[in-house]
Length: 145
Image (cartoon, one colour):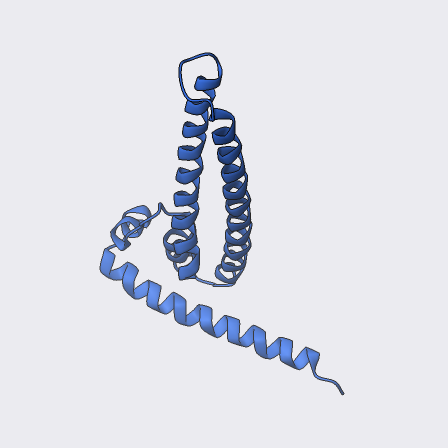
C-alpha cells in the first residue's frame, strides 16, 4: 500500500517535468515565428517533441500502473468491516493529499491522532487477515481433486 503513496509522488514529478518541457518547446516555437534567434530551432523542437513524447509515454504508463495498484488497494480496503478503519486507510493511502499526515487523517474523521494511529494498526492487521483468508480460499478452489 505504501507503493501507492510513492507512485503518486512520482506521477506528480513526471507531470511537472512534462510541463517544463512544454514551456521550453513553446519558447523555441517563438524563435521560428520570426523572432531573432538561432537557425537550429527546428532541431530543438524535434528534440523537445521527442522528449515530450517519451515522457508522456512514461507518464501514461505510470498513471496506468498507479490506477491498477489503487484499484487493488481499494478492493482490499473495501473488505474491512469497520467503516472507520476503511476511512483511515483510504484517506492515508489513496485519497489524501500527497504527503498526507496522520494529523490530517485525524482531522478528516474527527478523531485524535493517537486513535487514528491505533486504528491504522488494527486496520492493517484486519486487512492482512482478510487477504490471507482470501488466499487460503483461492488455494482450496485451485486444488485438483
